[in-house]
Length: 250
Image 1: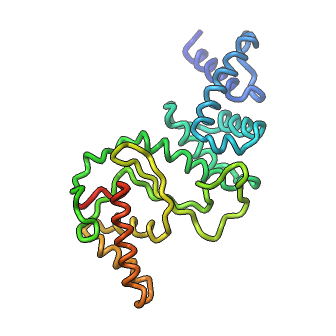
Image 2: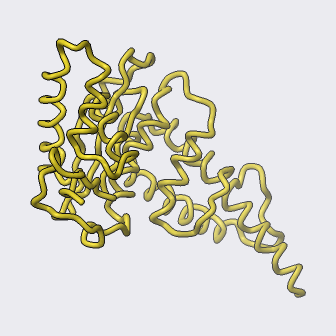
Image 3: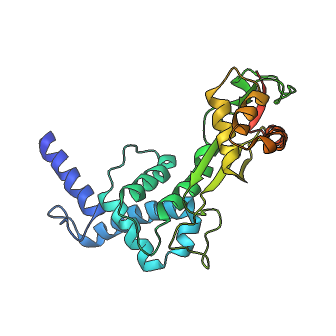
């Protein structure tokens, strides 16, 4: 058998395993043996995805779940063979797919579930960031952890469960911060949109003090409310430092 013939055989075999209903197996292979491969490959992928997305697995009925996974398995073109990256590929698949009228929140929920795994294996290191952990994040220049991710969703992804599956997005977005702290624990915080803006302001102004960043946001408020807004923003900076979202100061 030539190299090109062998390659064609491999492609035909792989196409059959991915989508046996629409791709005939290579000639001469016993179906009983092929069935073992079909089941083994699919179950490996299905089990991995179910483990990465436990909430989705619980809320989607069995038939719909397997149809969804088989669609991913058959048609999504993954760009990595690494098992830890399959979850990210499943998120990309759902984002590119037309929204499900029954569960329009599905792609955002998948992203929310994927984030915990992604952050747990992120290779960024707090130790490699120059900072003073005892610095005053209000008076000094705050340093954001590379392992802190601000997230904004249209859907209340952290509340979705079997008996809470909205079909219309609420008026207000869901704002979260997920962080891997110094103990390597991954934690989620529900925050206000202003906290997200505060973190964005700190990130975009690396030379400014925390107080300067808070004062910038306080300008959005009426003059009579600015003092209270600055106090609240300063308190939030300290709380973010306590949760390792802010590591300290530059």
